[in-house]
Amino acid sequence: MNKKTKIAFFILGFLAIGQVLWWAHLLIDQQILIAQLEPDFHEKTKHFNRMILAETAFFLFFWSLSLWYTYRSYKEQLSLRKAHNSFLGGISHELKTPIANIQICLETLARPDIDKNKVPIYVERAQKALESLLNQVENILTFTAIDSLSPKKEQFQIKDLVEQEIKVLQQNGKILNRAVQVHIPQGLIVNSPILASQLVIKNILENAIKYSSRSSKKDIYISGKKTDRKIFLTIRDHGIGMTKEEIEASTKPFWRSERAIKEALPGTGMGLTLSQEIASRSQIQIHLESAGLNQGVEATIIWESL
Image (tube, rainbow, N blue to C red; front, side, top):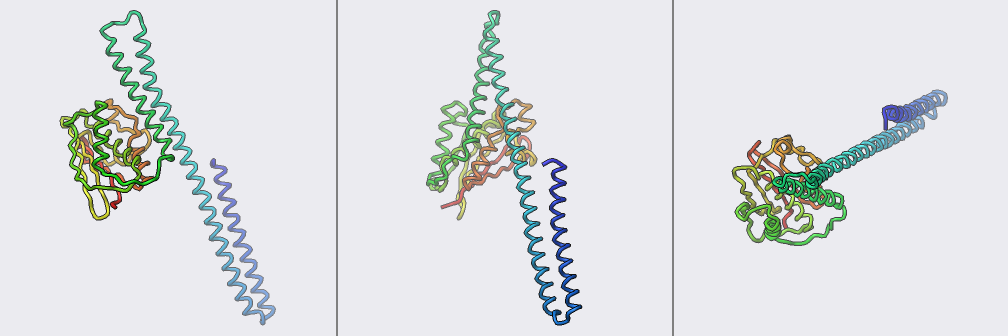
């Protein structure tokens, strides 16, 4: 809806309201005139006036409600369209970068005069770019498949799910055995979509590992506790930390802090977006806290207790 269309929309809306008010005014004046000519109709005139005012108010209320609802729906559709375009633009940019890096590395490796000592360097760069590309594709596929995630709830131990994810990370060489300290008591059982919980834990844990990779203290602390109504899983790192503004912006698609970009930390800016979207659809809460820059981040995942 451009500016002219918006102006025409509001003019037509207010014109209809003005027309109703004008007809109500004419009808009331007519009833007053009839009462003056025929005194016997005085009581009936009062009744008709009340009826006209009530019907006018009823029409104005629902007409105004319809205008507001129509305009709000338009704004929501416009917001969704902008988000969709932004998402597609972000995907294109994020996919082009590693593809271009792989292409450059392969073209360089194909040159007959390449320095043999530099071959391992270009191979490593290509491998890192390929890993980044695979991560981005995986995130994009997960993001687009969120609607198809099973809503079926299952009972499972939080400790078992966390240990399973840590084992996968260890097998992929992303962490050492000493890098993660787990303090989760047995008995923390939740009833929730297990795949959704698994994806949320995976993304939060990978973020903690990634953003603390260059810190002098790389250990990740994972703890769990239970209250009367909720179960909490806390994942804390000692990485680059976050400001309040960064925490608020962290769930925007493809958003990354300037410090993460400057330090060339790997990532697509989709991890927390995915986690928040999946969590909100599965009645899971995510809460982020940080004492500030270089003070690490404490992420708490919250489920309803059985």
